[in-house]
Image 1: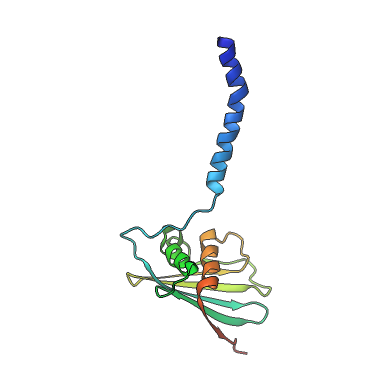
Image 2: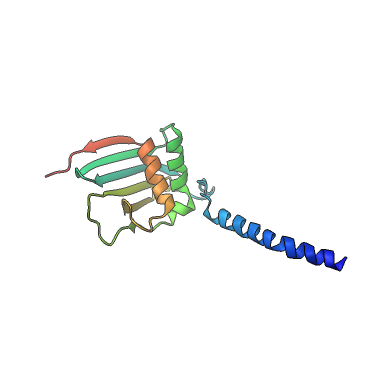
Length: 151
């Protein structure tokens, strides 16, 4: 009987350890769903995003507010109200901002009249995924206003 228990542990424990390790890694790398603001947290009223630069130096504004009805707008409003977004630094900028990349500035207005502004440059290492998600969803959801860059 003792030999069968020893054999069971010898044959199964490494497999169980590998499985537990894989599950814990998968749990840490899976995308985190947007979470609504806690009841005592202010809700997002509007998001204004400015995209500037690129090859042509154009400036575009994208807006999302509570009147928008598409799913991307709902994602923007929910994600910007989350703690993950509210704790972001004001800027995620590269050491070398050259080479025709877009600069994104996201300005969020909350129900308590506070404003949060976060700026990043396209393809900047270390930009948090929550900010990249807000930028992508705002591009898909927002009303656009284009302006030519002054010469």
